Amino acid sequence: MNKYTFSVIIPAHNEENYIARCIHSIKIAAKHYGGNTEIIVVCNRCTDRTADIAVSCGAKVLYNETRCIASVRNTGIASANGDIIVTIDADNRMTRGTLKEIAYKISTGKYIGGGSPIKFERHSFALICNENLCKFAFRITGLYCGIFWAEKKTFQAIEGFSELKAMEDAATAKKLKQYGKIFGKKYTTLKKNFLINSTRKFDDMGDWLYFKLMLKNVDTLLRAAFGDRRKLDILLDEMFYDYNDKNGENKK
Image (cartoon, rainbow, N blue to C red):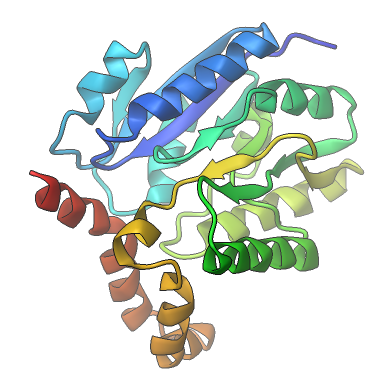
């Protein structure tokens, strides 16, 4: 198997409580793989110690001040030196064999890139329902998300992540899948490894959080489906872009 070089991109907005463990999981996977791996943390409007902790853990730190996680990821991709790009959110972790399995799949020439299965770091009936909902959506659409991976030249060819506030992951997976068809390659998912998904929002707001949000915001979701995204963008700001600000204030 070829020894590809990796660049792992971590978008981070006020992640001082999680960034070290994310980087640690990448280092374990890098050691298991055996090739060169650079870790790039892209700080997004951070007001805490995320950057300092990332540097102390050996990561390269970049900055992007937009309110669009896809743009934050693209900043990291543009500066990456690795043959293969992997993206992972700062509060999540990868399993030990992740990079090795990605390298193997790329080396076969059968795959343009892919995502990964998702498993929550703790379990309850509600979280198992969430996991199964993700599995069902991934299986039906074939747009596996979680950890993203593809060669850098592939990300460059599709012009990086789709810079949307919502469903940027699915839109990017769709672009990768369509681009792969040109070369007879499939968009796939990891089989032996998975994303260890943080439960911090569920810990704070209850394990049925996303089901409640879907019921509470049916009108917003329907409007967005027909092109009116104004209320959806406000909801996304509250749930994702502003969450860490509020969480950080509560812990001070």
